[in-house]
Length: 239
Image 1 (tube, rainbow, N blue to C red):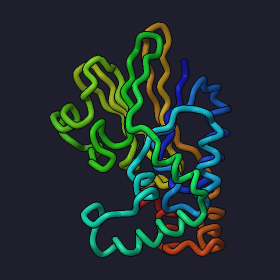
Image 2 (cartoon, rainbow, N blue to C red; image 1 turned 180 degrees about the vertical axis):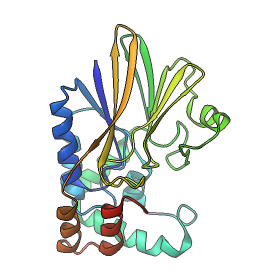
Image 3 (tube, one colour; image 1 turned 30 degrees about the vertical axis):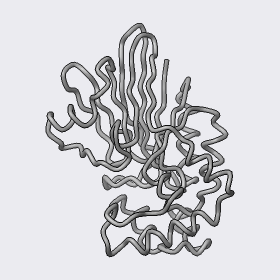
Image 4 (cartoon, helix red, strand yellow; image 1 turned 135 degrees about the horizontal axis):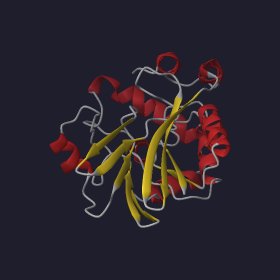
């Protein structure tokens, strides 16, 4: 069983197109989506439609919550709060009311059993859409923040836009990175693979080329409120 976990698309439907094509080429059996579908990209509606057309299980990320109810003071730096809500308003204007309802209704966790292997998946942590657990977090933080499902053998999360794989206490932690806005300096879409066969587990991260300049052009074409900064992030994969 080959499972793809994708997340943090952030309205970058061009990157999502490339990832879905790569997933098809890899002969994947199932795709799951770990949130952050629309916010901060030039094609929020197309990104959401692509995800919904997968007819799979999708969970909520912090950016989905922001689309639903706005960015609140204390969730981001004060100096960017107004701008981020301006971006959020633009995103909402591109969506239908039913799209907002869909985002609001998304669950926060995904628990899977694949051939007796239990997988715990969530956006940031099992208890928060916003908490940040970085690749260099110490073992205690990883265990306390992420590894709450006692019977799980694999823990999959997203949110930080910096993919990695780590092993702790005989279990696997994988951050799948970001499809649309990687922050690790490698300007390629990222997603995670978990393969289970006869109880054996294999995890990997795929990095996929896509047309960066077409995304940059779209930011300006659609008059996105923060086009210059977001274009720089697309090109450099750094925030």
